[in-house]
View (spheres, one colour):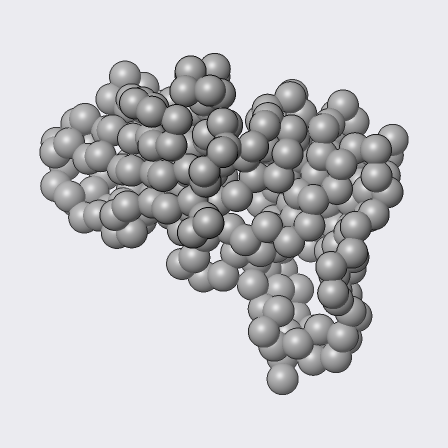
Length: 110
Length: 113
């Protein structure tokens, strides 16, 4: 049974810092991994999708990497801004199911 | 495309009442997911449809929950009778296939009193 873990559960950093969020999963037989952002009381916004054959994806200040063999993904946020404050969720897709981690709550202090 | 659209955004109902949540998929998508989010359990998959057919309903809590796809672009999730422990945020999501990017709606916050 696939299990997804995200560390840390919460993170507080000063504005401008580069940071890394971690996601690990137990079953490497995945189709893809997706990173989402969730603002309080809002839905999930897709940030990046990495297919199982890919090593990384980039969008603006965000870079996500995938190491399928070790069951790990990282989301790198460069030059963090207060507007980046949100909960970040990773989800792995094996067959059709998206299995979510419990998220990392990020606070970027001005 | 306006994305995945859910209605209502908020629903407050009394225990024992029937509740119907609605979801409009992104045009051309044929995979549909219903998820429930709570503080205690995070995001849980309730049911998955592919091409209007329910493929996996193992996450549906009990017989009080039912879901349908009357056509390729629309789905409902019904709870009857509702109970306070059903209080949660319910999301639907769609993707073009079962291995591509999933897009989520804004969710329905359900409160059963």
